Length: 420
Image (cartoon, rainbow, N blue to C red; front, side, top):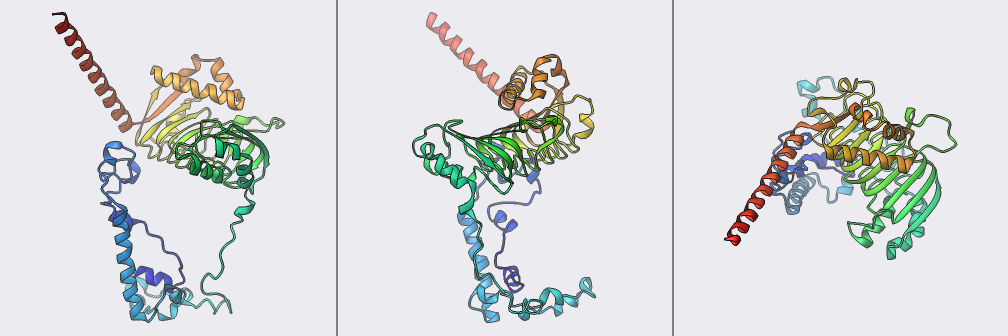
């Protein structure tokens, strides 16, 4: 019924969200953001993911049922095709809705007005395809220049200029690489692309393993969106006079939904940095509000100030924040995370390695100062880690130690028996 009404009001595409999820087994626990989905749909936990019992056939069956019911309603209204229904608001009856007390005094006539009334001779439905201009995309040139890597896995170095109308740079190239080499992609840094200028939105989106994007300039929103193994390096122009760590160099929502890869940004990121990151490792010199929101995996090193609401809904991964002014705790959302000093040897080694790489790739003065004052400056770093994630890792470490002890005991026992 909703599909039919939407078509009569002018819709040509209908999106489904909750319905197909229910068909796949969703029980609407409303815990999608907590990484504790009991049916294994909205979680990265391997134990919970094993509980997922949904199949593509379940969604197909659900959509067939929706189509069947829509066909029955179309027959009642006298329509043979969906295309014939689009924009036919004249067959909608609103008397029942208007008569309801909640809609008392509501005027629905603007919604139900035929398209031709305000716009004579206007098309009621889409009659021509949109031209996305993909043939003009910068990636077409990148694909040609990277052909030796795509076809034979040879190393390629590319240098070009970029402007802010060049969007999703690296995405089409990654598609070609994955089609040729599979999901694993190429060896790291097989294709190294050095760019100068201001990149458009979605710079390095969904970039696969084997591709490095090095940008001397700045980038807009969604840098590294869905990053899938590639490497992104952004630093300001060498001729610029401003202080890098005091200025924003990338836009909002960088590394949204990233699953792998690494990113190094010499400068600040705007809001919602690393939102829903589930596997990428990143270094940046400051972030705006809502940093690491809903993060489920990966690592984030913040070598500068943060905005408010940091780590809200964070259920996995680790963030290392350089808290120089001691006020980070007031800007962090403590609902799901613990704030600890960086004391574990593995954590210290990981943090130092990421900072060293940040210095090597970007020439960061901040990274250089941190390493010069190491290990004294280490006391100013805060380890942000989800409480449940910490508990799971502790249990896993304890289990591994017990297994190692058991193996050692068995080996010792075998040696004693052999000696006898």
